[in-house]
Length: 318
Image (cartoon, rainbow, N blue to C red):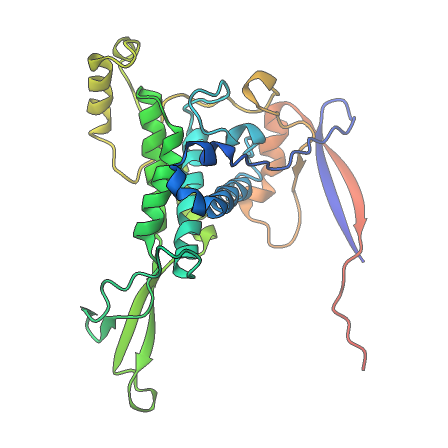
């Protein structure tokens, strides 16, 4: 039997845990996507869900932990902003949809596509040639773009930022692909190899985009020109700013709040009632500092609660 220590953040000592289950509404995708692509709807739904689950994993010990309000990807939604966190949501959602479409295509789930063998037979490098079944990222990218980018109907700076971050997510899927090879030759000599490109684990894409989040670039816009809305002056200011931004760089427009306190109108739940960690096996420094980050730095105190968890010890009887 193992004993676990549960630390709860509290002001009054009353436990008020906030339990929120990720609830991704796929209706936005299905209603805005081209009717001809409804055959891909289940993959789009699964991809969007996997993106948000990865978001929750990456931000599990952060003050902002990817709440339900983060799942609304339209700039017309009153909860939307152009913060650093929003940039990650757009990127990981876009990546999740593209990833799942690509994988399902390679598995033969769609009649209209299969694996990418366009380079098969070509020399790829010293001692290897292209062969096998490369994951068809071009297909995944195309359909993902049609679905996800269709949610963005605006033409202002905020909309362009969201579209840019959607593209960062799609590029992340490409940039993390791995080359896999199979040896050929007498008695396993591996004198020649055939190689193909395959998707990385989605966790690796999440880690990649989390680094991009940490390095995200804040756009400094001319507010006078931005107030011009969808005018030529406003579009010119936006074009000038994006000219200096790399295609793989996440961008945001507004500084984030501290996320310590609850703000229902903005969909922020605050950190009161959240769990944190101080001790345990194989904890990262980021996890060990979670009580300080979620609690003391937010003016809360840590309430310790002990729970008993019955777990299998893998006993064997002889």
